[in-house]
Length: 302
Image (cartoon, rainbow, N blue to C red; front, side):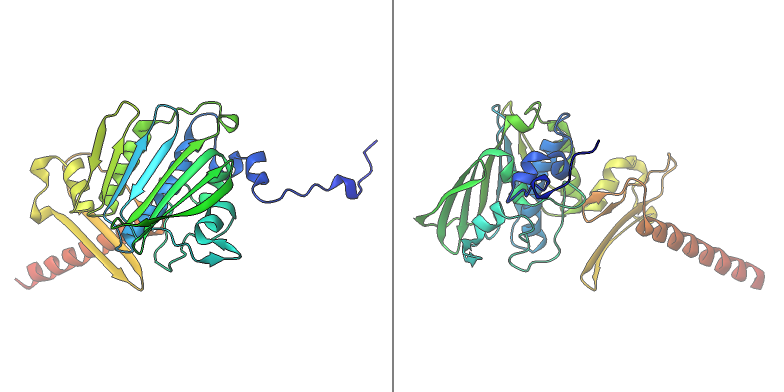
């Protein structure tokens, strides 16, 4: 016989306890390491936002042997103005759905997961997290332990700009703290193609550093995947335009080799294509038809 359903049956989970109870719902698999990758890329997303807003030029990630990770950028820093009785840093790090677009920059992107879980989720699943924000000539420092703020410190004047975030995932939420460095390296290389001029630097647990930067954007990706003899000005196309606050970049090349299509939307790979891919294919087909019709008309007139 079913148990009686009463008020005692209702459990209210407050603050970030829901994240800790079901971490996989927020960051993905906690067994195979992909959840750790998503946590790291969630932090990186905020640095990419700064680049897209024209406020930074590099992102540096350091992976340490003890499982902790560090993300550094040269953006404008996280503000400390008050939000619901907390500093902005504390609100962002401890409250779900506290917008990452606090300085109204656009567009906002998620380079780790489709929905973007927010820094509060990352903080909730860490033993500790430290943030240094260099903003408006002041160095602000804050530390969180098991998601709880240890207090915001003003560490004085500084000429530095940007944000540094060091965080250590808690082993009790993960079967292993080993993160796939090849996945991170591959993602950084993709970002360097998608964000022309952005420098992405990755230092692995062995101390080796790789740096990725492609000022030519997707045109550089075309150079990489096409045989050198095929990459000619006459048989390649590249444009990067912004209309109605939407940026579209396309690199298209013709090769005698096997066809290859790699598409992205909001910096995430769209494995199954999408309307943006269909539109390109349709547009190219129409252009070829138009040229063919034009050539046929000229031949007939001759």
